[in-house]
Amino acid sequence: MRFFITDDDYAIRSILNQIIEDEDLGEVVEEAEDGYLLDGHILNLKQIDILFIDLLMPIRDGIETIRHLKGIFSGKIIMISQVESKDLIGEAYSLGIDYYITKPINRMEVLTVIRKVMERIYLERSINNIQASLNSLVNLAQPKVDTFNEKSILKVGEYLLSELGIVGENGHKDFIEILQYLFENENAYTFEQQFPTLKDIFEEISKKKLGPSAAQADINREIKASAQRIRRAINHSLNYFASLGLTDFSNQKFENYASKYFEFTVISQKMKELKNAKRRLTPTQVNTKKFIQVFYFEAKRLISGEYL
Image 1 (cartoon, rainbow, N blue to C red):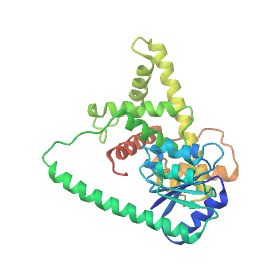
Image 2: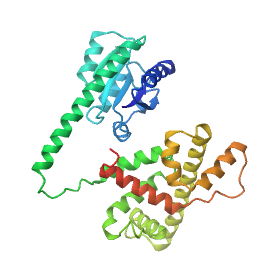
Image 3: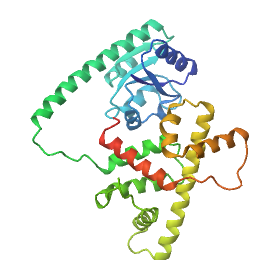
Image 4: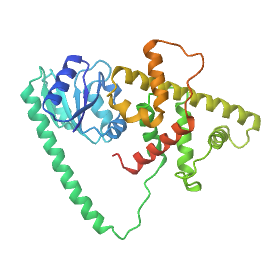
């Protein structure tokens, strides 16, 4: 099982994390200190099975957060709080939580609740698998429908950029535009054999951004600016993963992404620089085309459902 813990009290997050780890119930994928940090699409892409969420939090409380996630997040929700108001508990259940645990945290209660939720998840998955098998028999002769759409591109793109430490960077929008361009034009190329050149990619997204009446001089300036934003964003990602690697070489994000997007020698050199607090006189050389290729193929696999 994959867990996400949301509570503004670090001690509570630590206790829940320890219980899950000690009992080998699964993996705590991530933690957050407030509900405003949660996004249903991102939780789904992270494959969160069980979300712990505190009722009282300073910016967005548990009730508002559940309303925000309702109809989007597909996992189970366990609410935790020291408040025992019947009205609040009833409202939480009406919004779709599965269980309500009162503070202070009782280890046995937490274990009992988690195991009940896990049993429900396993049962639902078994039913869904049976239903899927029946549907596949019924629809065996029907043509496969392409479920690709622009909304799915944006969701996956935002998720990957978040994982790569690029969300909020200047090149963030450029990456989304590149992803849209590649998906829209994948039928014109055999990308597995011949990926578009960087020149073609930057030129096409610049033309689309500026419009058909744009002068070539303006297009050329935008190509240069876009390429520069992308390079800076990639360097930011490199620093992000090098920092993760220095803190914990077995960090899941570091293991999952660093070696895919960057050459080992580049990551290693950046980690040494950060460790020794040395400033390079020239920027680190990164392979922009490789980064974009991996970004595209990872997004394509996510949309096809390979990781979901």
